[in-house]
Image (cartoon, rainbow, N blue to C red; front, side):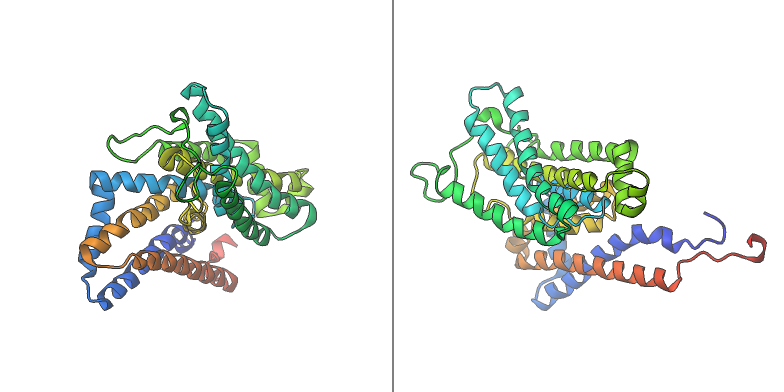
Length: 358
């Protein structure tokens, strides 16, 4: 950075998510105050219970795991200039893949069964993600439309399977038989539901960082995302890269479904995801393309989800306020993107040169 280069464009990617979250919390505080409750008390309960209490923090980790994996799936697609709106459907397909491996490959030792179940979730999610990737690369079909529509296909497919061929005999509601314990993700905090899915997410984040920052594939993904025409001119296969990156995005989101099924529920339920795939879109955009940002934002969203019910019981604040805060966070980050683009277009961020530099 030269002495005359403005510092604002450098700080903006860091400040924008912070300002967006702070603004959402401020508006949330106003909503809480209008409901006749104390915002300070509500937020104190929310974050104390979700981050400092042993059982509350365990619940936060449980909810952070699928958010982190799905957020990475959306992020890697964005790196290649693709908008993966289908993480929710990929979560369902990943849960289905892990369930099938868990149920139909019994008798295996845990050190084989569990990795195979995770691999099944990754492959099912990856195949589901590669469908819009192929349609975009080969047929030119907009991936936003195909990924969004495939969400409903996946959700209804899983719903049909757990109501018909995969249903537990005599089950009072649609769910599959219990998976063998050899396919379960181990508990990492005793006497809680916190499982090793969070470790899977952190390992996936590290591997993805290495791939994007230290490998030819990562360079190719970045090149296609920045300028597909130039990447094609340089000899890169843009079509193959798009299909590959969408498959990778689907696989990571599929692992989020595996985390829910193998770590928390131990069977496949109808509508088992509470919207993690849609939260992942906000997480990826808030991270501004930074993998560490995805980890931090996933933890923030996990804490919101974990502390929402406690806040309702202790501070008499409806859970819907938390969902309003999440929505407002997305709104404010979108506003920050729009302002940033406008400033760049108007040349406000262009560095100024003095006579000596001309």
